[in-house]
Image (cartoon, rainbow, N blue to C red):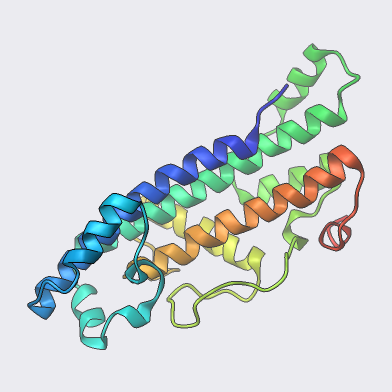
Length: 230
C-alpha cells in the first residue's frame, strides 16, 4: 500500500502557494491605493512572471503602522488569510493521516492485505490529538515531541507559539474556528504574514518529520530528533 504521503502534501503545498501569490498581488495593490503611488509596478511584474513572493507576504515590517490599522478593516484580506490557514491545516492533516497509513502498512508488510485494510478502516482520525494518539499507540512515535530545532516565527506576527507542536495545535484550533465561524479568535489573522507563519510552520514541520522518520521507519536510523519521540 503506497500512499506517497509527502507527494500529496507537496501537491497541496503548491496549490496554497498559488493562493498566496495571488493574495500577495492583491495586498500590494491595496497598499498602493493607500500610498497613492504605483511604487510596486515592476515588483508586480516580477511576481507575475517569476513566480516569487514579496516581503508583504512574510514581514509585517513591510507595512507602516497606519497601513496595518487600515488593513485590519479590510474583510477580503482577512478572509484570504483565513482560507490560507484552513488549507494549510488540511494539508498537514492529510499528510499525517496518509503517512500513518504508509508507516503502519510497512510495519504490517507480512500481514495479508485484507487484514491490513480491515485494521486501517477501524482507526479514526477525527482531529490532531486523535492522530497523535494513533501514532503513539500503533507506531510507537510521540509526534508531539518532534521539535526539530529552532522554532521559526516572526516575533511581530500575530501567530504566537513557543514550540512547534504548540504552533500546530493553535493552527488546528484556528482551523476549527474558521470552519465553524468564518474567523479565528485564537489566531488573529489580519495580514498575510500572520497566515504565512501558519503555512510555513506546517510545511517546515512536515518536511523535517518526513525526512527524519523515513530514515527511522525504513532504514532503522535514529536521528537525535527521532530519539526524543520514542
